[in-house]
Length: 138
Image 1 (cartoon, helix red, strand yellow):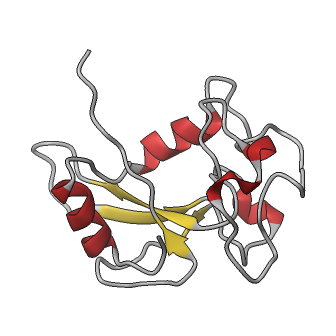
Image 2 (tube, helix red, strand yellow; image 1 turned 120 degrees about the horizontal axis):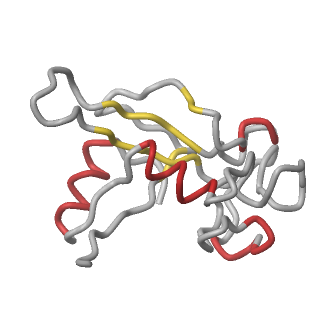
């Protein structure tokens, strides 16, 4: 889903017992233990990401772009919101970042290190969506 504000995406996630990933969690899921440059590896691969186009594609349309953990579309298609709260006891507001590049981005925007301008809590963008994190008991 795209076009929701960080406030609405966060509320939706909480309602179903999940949350938005932090910037660091998102990067780890995309990069994997090999510390890749792109979710699919270190080399440019124009077939691995829906980028430089004019529309979203189905989530499963580019399996060759999967991250080491099997996450799809972490580079291209819809850019994704991350929500990082300050450490307990620290001051400051949460940080909202957009990661992964969207379908309008160029291939360099799909780099894991690329972070787009922070969005306000109520800002929306038709190219920005989100993925959810669920806590697991160990």
